[in-house]
Each structure stands twice: as C-alpha cells, then as structure tokens.
Image (cartoon, rainbow, N blue to C red):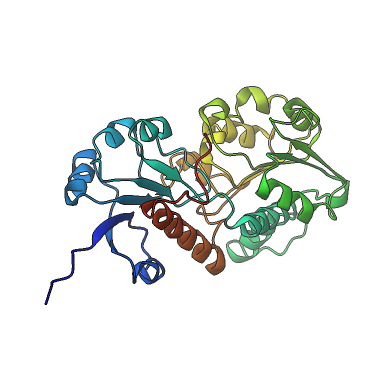
Length: 315
C-alpha cells in the first residue's frame, strides 16, 4: 500500500475559536491547518520552516521585513478582515504572493452596531444606567438636556458598503444626512461635515493619508459639539486630541468600537463619563463570523488551485 502524501500546511493566526469551519473546507483537499500566534519576528519566521503554502491572518503586522523572509512556498496571504493595512502589499507583489481580504462581510452587522451606538449615546443610556446602578439615583435630569434625533444632522465620512447601509438605516430618524466620499466631489466636504453636523460617524478604511483624520485641527472646525462614532479604525482618531475635546466639551460624546493601540486603551479615555467603548466587536455576529472565515479560506484554496481570488486586494 502506497502511503498518502503528507498534506501541505496553511498557517492561520490563532484567534481563540475552534477551527471546525476551516477544517471542514479543507477535508477533501491536500492541505491542513497549522495554528500560529502573534509573536516576535524571529519566532514568527521560525514557524515558516515547515514551508507552508498560505497564511491567513488578522492582527499580525506583516511588514516588508517579515514578507521578504517568507519561504517561496507561500503563494497567498489572506487578511481575515475588511481592511489590509497590516500587510505590506507592495512587498507581497514583489514576491509574487497574492493578497486577498473580505471587504463585503458583516456590512449589515457593522451598520447595526453603529446605529446602536448612536442611539445609546444620543439618549445617554449609559449615563442613566450608571446613575441608577452605581449611585442609586433616579433622576431624569442627570444627563442634561437631550434633543430629539429628528432635529439633528448626521455626517457620514465614507460611503462604501457600510457607510451606505448605515445611512439607509439612519435616514428615517434624523433631520438630514451629509456624506463625504473622498472619491466623489459631488458629496459634502469634510469642512462642511465638521461645521454642520451634530453626529459624525467614520466609515472609511485606514490609510497613511487619513491618519488622525480627527485631530485637534479638525476638531476645532466642529461647531455643533457633535457626537463622534467610530466603527472603522482606531488610527483615524488622535486619542489625545479626542480626550481634550471630550473634557472641554468640543465633542459632546464619543462612541468607539475601535481605538488606537487596541486593546491597550488610554487610561484617561477610560475615565471619561462621556465615552462609550465596545471591544472592536461591531463586525461580530454568528452569521458574519461564518461568512468571514468561509470566504477567507475559499479564496486561499482558489489561489492554490491556480484560480483568481474572489476578493484580491486592489492594484
């Protein structure tokens, strides 16, 4: 009897869940899963000694230094996310490594989370909850003056899948919506949004060009003491500038699903009463997680079969 050939390895970053979805997809293929953890560069590179053919990651910073030392056996890197800022795509292309991601998973889920944050903050639900539970105070005035949502202008920065979905969900509740799309000159300018909007919600992918889009300079343009919502990327917001603005009232409240340097959150931010934080969970539901994991693995297998991925990183 001829012994079966050993299976080639697809490396995947450990994210804490079971791997039944991935293993089911690999069952009839010549590949097997090898789980790795985020680790120092030398330890990470040592994992490649088994000559894997693919890598599925989320939070590992795949720099040019790391990618340049990957074995030639690696044909594809799949970012298990809607963004790919952790990957040096240019170096991957120099090494003929395909890079793919999953831009269309969890659209409705993230938009729902953004809606939930808007309502929770605009109605000061956390303030009322804490006053009752922590201080045993039953007082409708403890949160200050509250406005009707239908008197407020919503500004949405980023009009992709999620931003558009969020706009459609919010349209029945607000007075008007201004949108900004950096690729569409017919949409509102950032200056118009900063000056006119009572709620500002971020829905753009992070790039080096929009690092600290929300900064002391742009906050100074905000005339309505707005609510700030961020379900996109933490590096879009200068945390120190945000803290100062929350303290002096230039931004009335912030609801953040993402922050700089997460999960290491600035202690001064945590201490503020006008901040609502969730742990980068806007994307999560049972359905969206299955979609994300399935699409990532299917694209890896497509590339390994010599086919084009469904979701290649744009040129």
